[in-house]
Image (tube, rainbow, N blue to C red; front, side, top):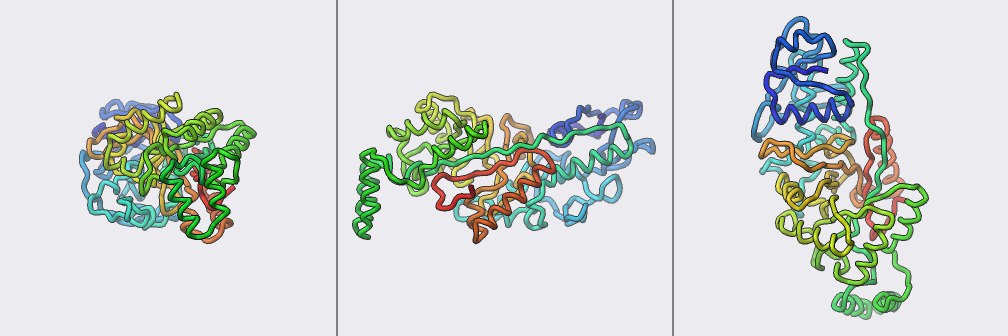
Amino acid sequence: MLVYVPQITPRVRFTLDVILGRLLNISYDITTDLSVFESCQTEKLAYAPVPIDKECKIWIEAHPLLFEESFHQQQIIPTPWNGIQLFFPTSNGAFPIDIFAVSFYLLSRYEEYNPDSRRDQHNRFPITESVSYQLKFYRKPVVNMLAYALGEEIQKHYPFFLFQKPEFKTLTTYDVDIAYQYRGKGLFRFIGSLGKSFLHLDFKTIGKNIQGALGIKHEDSFDRFQLHKDLFESENSKPIHFILTTSFSKYNKNISPKSKTFKELIRFLKGFSEIGLHPSYLSSERPELFIKEKNLLEEIGNIQVRKSRQHYLRFQFPSTFEALIEAGIHEDYSLGWHDEAGFRLSTTIPIPFFNIQTNSIRPLTLVPLTAMDGALYHCYETLEECKNVVEELRQKVQVYGGTFVILYHNNSKKHLF
């Protein structure tokens, strides 16, 4: 496949790599030479503001976005396409919208660079601020849909053209925010919990606190790790456990990473699961914490940590992701919604991180998170409703290919499985 563009920019390279290389699984070349493009006898398309020539079968009218070098507020004009509302309308060409500009805007999370966007109490970008929510396509992998529409358009003009959707996979992940309800708390937390139980005359909890402190076997609803092991060994697959590895504070409530209990847990988990870092609540403001917490987890577990997901799904573009690169993280799994389920990256496949501020493709892979248990419990009243949403999203990923990534918490009071 040959693609003509008037200028090869980092944004053009990034977008074509995702659409053509990763979603359609085809090889392609890019050229700015019209004579080379005109002489090409195989599949080709032009991406430019104006038509190239009458012989060009596929022309996509280009919005300026992919040829710009900095952030500025984009005008979002709702435009119908294939039964949904998208944006960046065109006057002519193969599509009523610029499919590449729409894809870049969504994949790069362009809107999250807007300093004027509203944030929640944890300084997170809420789904209600997103164009995907406002135009009601947040539960559709729109970039996949645009890629396959392009593939079908190419096939109309070149009948022997073939493309292949990504393989469908399911990846189960866990955030270990609080490993145990009673074990490994340390002296001060043990005394505080014991005192609270005495005040409420909760003798059952008093007994469990004492058993946990003494290492005596007891019922602990947070301790689901053996269940995880049994489940994934029977399926011959590996989950990922992201471990919060920092001292106790208001928003960081895991057991002490220096405790014997913590070390035993890591030893147990790495026997059947991959281990990732769950950077602490303040890490998005204090980037030095990434390296500190990653080094501690690696030392305790005698492992290399290359995967990460932010605690509370709390991050900032682009600083959080640049700090992860600096810390030696290769894959981040934070790109899901904390307040709904759906496709925050509008795709089902891992993609490179594109930094809008430096206008460059960076050495970090963003793995889309499709659904989180806590967001589902927040939005829906019953477990049945939650399961229905999960199944709806899983089926969409299955149709379009890619990886369905779901997040559970071991300490959740409800369980989807």
